[in-house]
Image (cartoon, rainbow, N blue to C red):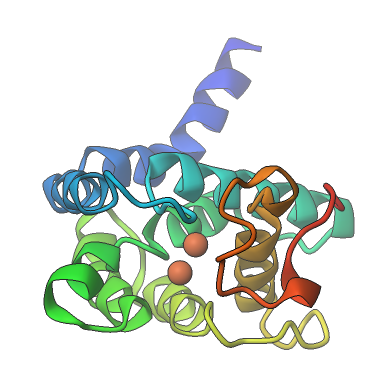
Length: 173
Ligand SMILES: [Fe+2]
Ligand SMILES: [Fe+2]
């Protein structure tokens, strides 16, 4: 049992290193600062973890077999470029990809994994989930990101730019 626990812990080592990475922490602080008065959906650590956990649940429910640290690493980085969007006008998917390109190899992700994660992040704003198997990680990220928003309880519902048909009227996962 003890050995198994250690194995499980090790499988998330790379994710823990993302959470401790100075670039990750610095960008999160910048996002928090930029969104201090924002009434719409935020992009803080809570959102990143919500997306990670929903994506992981969907992965388990559907038996997709993706590695946990691949799913969590993708979700944690998918909106990290949001501060650069606020300060420099860089679309945040592209800014997040650039941050992922720097952070992921430093915390131990292999080049092929880095490319897979970058592709999912780059697609998270416009990628409609296709058939699973085509690019399961990209599909999961897109879906979990949208499902993470509690529109049904949002005080900014009226002025939110999301079209009515895309707003989440209930928890559906
Ligand atoms: Fe985003
Ligand atoms: Fe997001």
